[in-house]
Image (cartoon, rainbow, N blue to C red; front, side, top):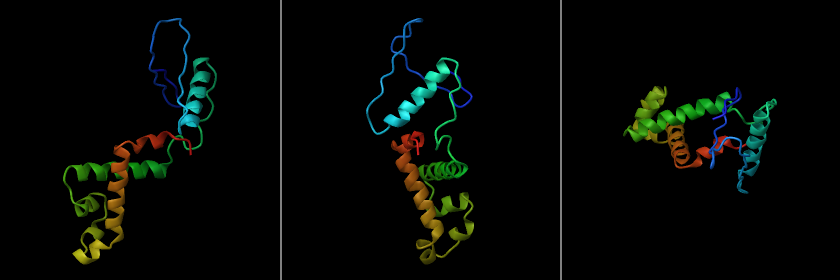
Length: 135
């Protein structure tokens, strides 16, 4: 790990022999631009240059962080067996959760909780990599 105030760089060295030159293998995939941006920032840091500001989209906005927090909380509760009503209460939507069954079925609060759980499940199953993409 190479420490950096803007975010640490984690490396996997195939041959960690000191003094040997380093090489980078960058897959030509949909994340190529993100990977190259990270590599260029690491290269500048490696040679004691200012890495420059992070790309637009790094770090996550306050809104995205807050939504991710809600998603994780909702997913944890759902994985522990909580119902959507119980999740709504835990996330501060008590008024929605108190609605009669017919109103609850079409409420914005229920839809909100279902979307949080759905999006968190998708992210848990591998979509979390999108957090690193440059937007």
